[in-house]
Amino acid sequence: MKMRSFLRESLVLNLVLFVALAMTFRSRPQGLGAGSEGMAGAEVGPNNRGDAEASEAGARSGPVEPGAWSWSQLTMDPLPAYRDGLRAIGCPDASIREILEPIVFRQFRERCRREVTPLSVSFWERLAGGINKTTKEVQSTAERLKQDHERALGDLLGALSAGSSVEALNGDPVTQFLPAETRSALQAAGDRHQVRLRALYDSSEIKGTNQAARLASLEAEYKDELANLLSSEQSAEYRRRSSNHASLRMLEGIELSESDVKSVVELLDRTENGSDDGRETELKALLGEDRAKELERAQDANYQMLHELGRRAGIPYENTAALWEAQQSAEIAARELASNTAQPTADREAAMSALRESIEASAEKLLGARGVSAWRQMRSNWLKGVFQVPPIDPLAGLPPAP
Image (cartoon, rainbow, N blue to C red):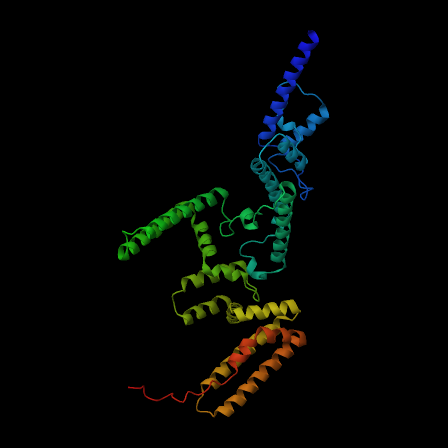
């Protein structure tokens, strides 16, 4: 009888321990070690380092006193073993994913902070180098880490999960200069403003003049809200970064300081609705005539393609700049020839052919054999369309039919 009673008590005690362990595995883990397959070598994050150290200390020191022991001391490293344990006790796959995905993401985020952040440049520094080696290195490193993240989830959960973009980790570059609390408040204000705008546009009762007045009122309210959130310096920087002209910092083929870029953005915003001549005069006064011309050239999409061709082919910057100038001059001359209907067509066609041969010869001299081949492919439509004489309309100049 004593033996039977002993066995019954032992069975009950084992059942209680099993239920306690099952409840532990169903709860979200707080302390994690290095990680899963595909993420091997990832360090313990700052939020769980204390529990991991406590677990190691507990393993070294042997049994602990009642009341001092924590469930977090149960090791869940490696993660595949933890996953298998969850499945063994009947935890649904959806719940396992909810438990493990944040763990892998934390490891991924920590790796991004260690490997991507040191490579990043400031918002306004990008203009000086454009899409330079640093930016490409950041993109390459971020893509590698994203693939590691997806591979880890795939190995761990049996199917790839959507990776997190670098933008989601690093935040909006326009507001990165602000404290975290201000960024959150700014985001909330923007969300509220969008809700109000949608409600206005969806309303069938407010149309025409009333809608325009209400829109102006909403914009004024939003500006007031921003003014309460940001200091004058923060507000000025936010306006610059939010400007459509802030993308100038990404241009290739021009070197400007951070203060120059900010001044150019402010000038373009201020003169956006003014005359082109007035804006050009102010840019020359701000940057000097040569650099103002460089800025104008850098904003041309055709020059950006030419500059990228030169960069990839190892052609000096001066050569691509000279070819762009030659292209501009040749195009102006071709337009003048095309519009000079007083000159015989045969003469214009001969002059146009000579003009095309001249620009192609210049391209070969400046770009070399390899570069000019790529240039001809890139500019084929331009060469065909610009350097031809349009046919004369026989009905041109006649009065319209009655």
